[in-house]
Length: 393
Image (cartoon, rainbow, N blue to C red; front, side, top):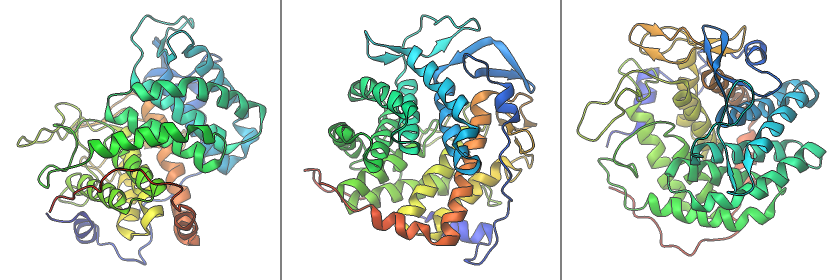
């Protein structure tokens, strides 16, 4: 196999002393606030204007709560307190105590729509609540989030799809690490065991636990990395890096730009991968996964991978056009062969804002050596009684 970091070094011309190619920008909440009402965050936009026809969804409100938490590290909590509280109100209203699941879709008038709850939506809600609990522990808002988190956590054990399992595992890892919900440990253990089993016996030609690469792929090795770090299983950490390295390699273009799998037909083994339409969620989740891998290992290749995915938003992509508007904080919905979409919906905007704040933290950590402290803190707290994974040759 051709290793990803060789590709990154060669194609990006990276050196240890190289300055980041793309600048960071001040926090801008202009477009996010324009997309937000007293109910929630509009799902879609026409151009930069909200499109109320499609109402709201729990997925995007959960993503917005994560952004508020991330931006508070730059702006202070007071600047986002009211917005975060609105997200918690939405998630509380979305939770169905009878089924133990989050409803997802809400119309423009605030009425909940009759739709099957999704595992993705539930897992994202858990993750956002965990982020809030860890950021402002001991506050009234964090206590409300904790109550909702614990009520909704048991449903995570019923998840079957690998991405919601991964998101829920990351949520439990956050609250255990922060010491705000140690009772989540048994759920972490069970989800970690399932994810590790799913990623066992990977094939060297297709080191992926599913027969197709679709959306938000980097969340899987990111969660696997957390599972290995917390349980003290180095073989699991190595497998997480192996899978992430492969995802980095197959999503770097010949010119060295980040080139995520397009969502038109995805990518099946033996077939040509979809080049378009590329989505902001793919770049943001790569930034997140590569950042976590850098904190866990200190390897420069992950810092470069995060930089490449961040630069995708700013024009270092297959078409050479920017998707993010740093001045407003908005982001276009996708990249097609003709350029960027004309619309700036919630998911794309929130993914850009997530990537920006994650890169801000990564560069600070890299410059200060903070990743060494993070790695030292991640000592194993217990071990899972499972056999080591076999790595593909």
